[in-house]
Length: 397
Image 1 (cartoon, one colour):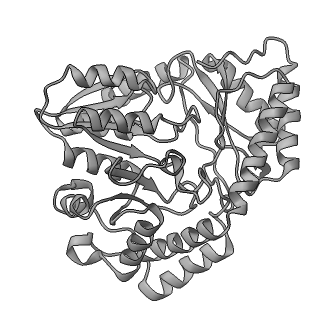
Image 2: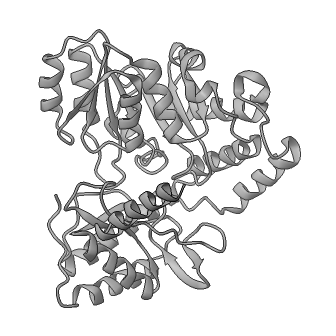
């Protein structure tokens, strides 16, 4: 045991030396724009609560009522005795929202991606993935036993070439919809064309786009005008724009029935608490009805990008709530994150392996709960940071 602990200490020290050590900050109240961290109030620009629903009174009330009606937990897996009325209602409402025949709930987005990919691909098959895909998508391909081929970021032409050279029986194309660290949108229409032309199945994980992008919040597929036939497998989450917890796969009835039979991360885990499903239903209703949240968010994004441009900060080409400022090296982004925290703002300092080496960044995220003065305050803090000797916001990769 002593040798084991020493080995772990050595590994941790190596992570620290490389500037990749992560430390948790403990929030002392509800998720939102105004948070308290270690007894100190801060304005939060680091979360994924894009529509500001995580602490919405109607969502909280639905969670409370759900607990009173159904108890604290589901008690079993969906296929044992854990599938309840609240789960079923949420699945049906999500199917209506996404314009798909059916939806299957999973406990997390990670489990939805692992479950879908490992059920749809296996030995002898090939999974083609964008090089900047989320870790859960890459892990799903690796766990499936299929051959994993990664194509250059958002490069549909390179994907077409790679697909044309393959001979696997099942070929699955997998991409994020809205990329969580860069804030850009996948070329989903081009990916769908490649999939159609070369007889492949396209799966899009739009965890960060659903609820946010498009006039009705339909995400990247709404922007591209694509439906179930063009993109047979759609993954979404309730833990981002909808402010609650859980995830889902949406598609045709046959896909959902197949995943019920074969997706191990669905079969072998306890169902989402029904009370959480009720909270998700309330959040979905608000997201659909209150389009002003998306409109306000778009105005804040434009305000931030205009102000950052005036400061000479180089931003990545993102029209989403995710606005990365690339600094390059790990030490610089840690210092910048600390300086912003001392100035009153909570901003994520993102380093490898979450992003490629040399592209460490401040991941600034906006929410419909932010006000213009919040954005202006952050810009003023960034101006002070930019004025410090040695500060340099590098060009977007």
